[in-house]
Image (cartoon, rainbow, N blue to C red):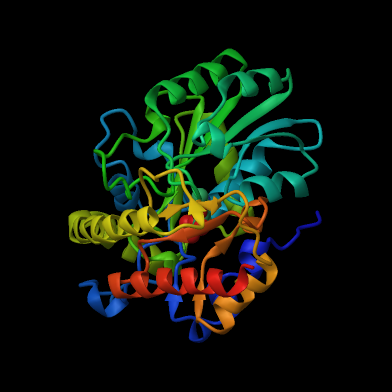
Length: 370
Ligand SMILES: Cc1ncc(COP(=O)(O)O)c(C=O)c1O
């Protein structure tokens, strides 16, 4: 298989070097936490092979609020990234077809491409408020369609798709004997609405994926999961995981358990921080003149674009923003869009960092626009 490195990874802050960035508005997560701030004792942990599906107490914590799901419906993986790779590589090949809503997390496009899977890509449009067009999906479904792939809450738009839309997607999957893959990595960043159950609760035809990376600020422990109620499919996913890594790091699992078992300690202050930053961001969008946006509903990112008629040299703009202003955002090409779009992350920075970062963005625009 031929894998291609994705621009979002090549140009990621950790690849650019964190020391070159002061105002990081490119992240889609909360600020990273430190091990010393967690009351977790790892000294007596036995460093054996962990249970292949994931340690039971962690799987219990993942489905804590569900009366429908059981621990057998959960497979712990090395982050949502591995979960998505497992799903694609187990379900898709050159004779299979995938409908993928774009923008989508890179892996949801790049792995199927590496697998030579047949794909119909449906782009979310700014003009449609980034809503999913169900009719467009219907037209693309074929007899060999295996998956419909979406992200909800959505990255990079911050869209939270309506219940009605999700129900229609589930119906489509059920009618056409295929599966709906829902990347729910941003699920717990629902700072304006109540927490919804995993979509996989609603149908055997739904595969939910999530992780502790974004909501808990713990991407370094590489813990994510797949949830699905179909025994055969979960067996296939386990077989794939065993090929990749057998089990997870038992240290990572122990820390992830601590996070989920103490949810409120992390999620409550995180939501409070997002509220404060979001309020400022909204105010800023109202007073600047070069970007237009679809206001995000969940998560910590938005995906504005340049207003008509504003045409900076985008290449130079992003470079200057980084080099001269020590500020970064996520340029549109990370999401297979033109560079007039950009992802702005408002959960990772402190409020002073967000304010300065946005000020820098504006100054850099003025300096690079004729
Ligand atoms: C939508 C989405 N899915 C999955 C991932 C991968 O997350 P993880 O760190 O859990 O592998 C990301 C990371 O940016 C993401 O944005």
